[in-house]
Length: 206
Image 1: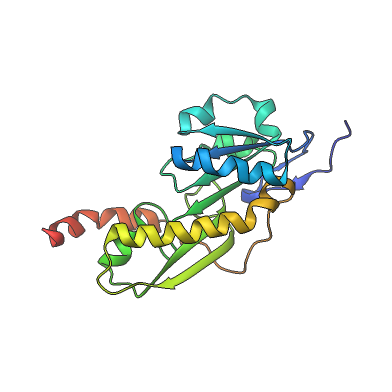
Image 2: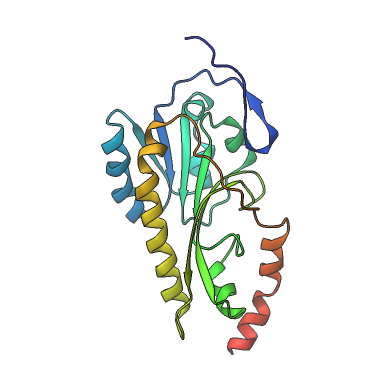
């Protein structure tokens, strides 16, 4: 098989893509592991969709497989290692249950704590820094009055499901990553800042 010309990957890495795109690795919960593979294979019947529940499952995959694969992470707290990201031949996409303003851990908690009037859902390319990759798609919506954390999480999830449905054909069939938007990613360290105020959130709630 001829070697495809070297391409520039997110994060500044470069590699020659030698393997044909034929696999999607789905890092998600049990519900998504049942619902999403048929959607992807509906656009690409010969596509192999592999389930991964956590970072240990990803670490167990061999390099040859990763070079043929794209990773889709959907509403997962797992952090993908730099080694796995570097080996993936066709990139990694994360469906994050919050807008770019709220990267990382527990975005709905922090939005309500800060009395945000707008929330959303983000799809972005994965890079080593958590939730800092180029943004592919954003859905935004007003925060309903008196909504709970679970309610806000549910709204974000519903928007992510719609985004996945719209993007499924591209993710399953196109070797190229979707085009990115001219939206800046979260500032470096924003996730750590949010984690640092979580104890204050709990004491306020008490």
